[in-house]
Length: 137
Image 1 (cartoon, helix red, strand yellow):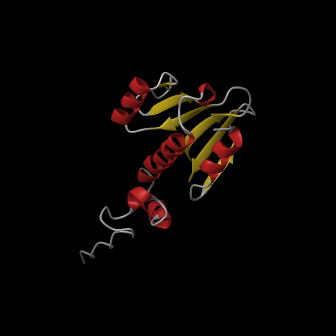
Image 2 (spheres, rainbow, N blue to C red):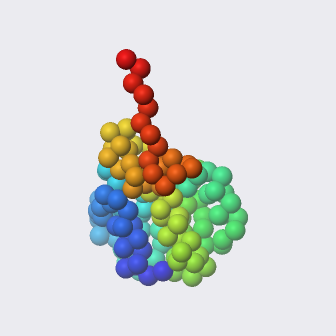
Image 3 (cartoon, rainbow, N blue to C red):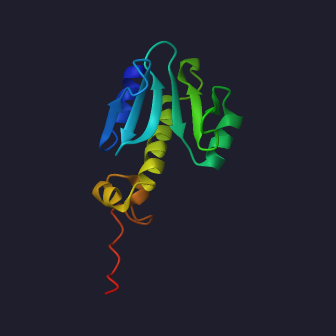
């Protein structure tokens, strides 16, 4: 995967934005001010993605180019894309999963706005949002 395709994949997520809060060398992709991907902006292409802790461990054991991110090692993986070991489609899935994990932790008001655009917020047996809960009043 090249940098352009990586950025396109990140920005294709609903309400995703690109920022450079750590200077020009790192690109941060956020949804509702929460980070879901950190990527190098120059040189060798590497990316940090959020993962389910068990999935993160499995990926680290499967790929030499996937390691624990030093800052948040339980939930974040560092991936050396320039090594060419990870297929583009797999990396795209990891980016989408990272996005979904972040959205799942957002306040309800934001999740409701994004509902229907985020796979993990869909009813598991249907291709549509789960029905709203009945009021307890």
